[in-house]
Length: 256
Length: 257
Image (cartoon, rainbow over all chains, first blue to last red; front, top):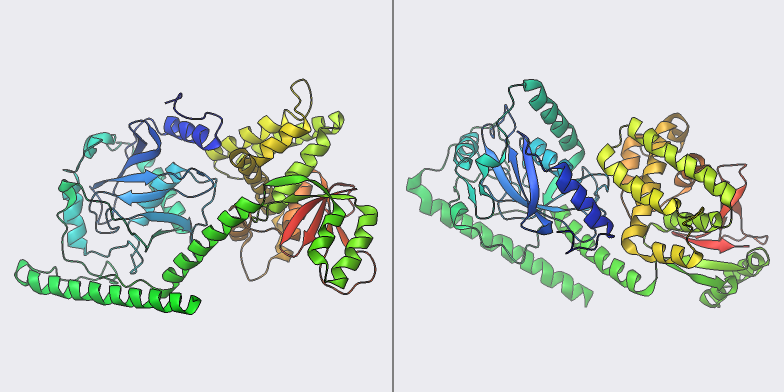
């Protein structure tokens, strides 16, 4: 990898250091560059204990911009999880602040801990956020263990066995919660080129419940009224698209 | 299916515009420009008697100017370049500065800044500082090249921002008085000091100047009706200035006597 990159570039030096720092899998997280592309990483995180994601292991991608660490990485979950949409870019920023307010002193490790810490927080209808029911999330958590990444293989094997020393796990989780309290994770709305999903993640549950606090029990949509709910969802998409299109037209007319 | 909140759409629009502006600015302005006579600014204010008057007075004291890219980092970048340029001619002060910078690393780590990333920025910063004197000393041309290489230049800016943030939090009792709007010092630092492209004001200048023991004189040039010379402020107060910056609303450039 050394020959391929300009070793004088701070981004390259930094990412080499991060790859080295994260080279040993831990029980909670693991991330490494894919093949020999230093700016494209895959990661796995364990679902936080005492949450709907407990027992789950989730896989995803992190893309680093050429200006990293001055500009934020974008994160994309690949394993269906019920909290973040899959194949949708999510960015980290300082909570309650303008987008792209990334701190250069954050790192890939910060991003991983933010994901772990942020998972149990309510989605609140934010872009790329999901508020699936507890049952659905728990079902996905079990199912996540079968997830196979075309590049990394079976992701369950990528993390270390959870440590018997609960202190260690707790320390990481406490750090994750602390980071999550300071950040917001938000999707990009103008996802013009949606990524084609790998075959093994296409099965998406349809019991989507938007803008519902997770603790509220919402009955899962049964298979009988699948068609009805599909129609409902499609109608909503059409309306949303129409609104967006109208807004864009209106604003471009005003600009002209 | 997804109802995107209004504020998020607004954010996206703002971000997009911001990126376009950034790109335009980068195409026109180098990160650090060449030395020009101060009178070159007169052309910008030909129809403006207030500015013309003030600039003419200013030109008696300051002969030239070096423009800094107006990207929100101009205070830090201008400060860094101007002071490093001065150190190239002052071996003794360079040695003192080296020791001061060395001390900032442990200080910041002890304040809880993440060690791993802090060391990354510190190493890059120190690498440049170490070459401002001694055997491997660089020349002014190389310094200018380093500051115009976006990657390295921005790394230097980040470290100066971290030092500033550290100082503000260390001396929180003092700086707290300048804070408005009920923000905590930590919040202020995370939102207004550490992120790139955030603009700087007095507080940043006092904190950076005190932390690195470098006097900064800022000359204010604005539309205020003053018949005397433009006002000057030294940061920290009562210092001997080593760095001279020209402030026009929203922007800093480097001044030379």
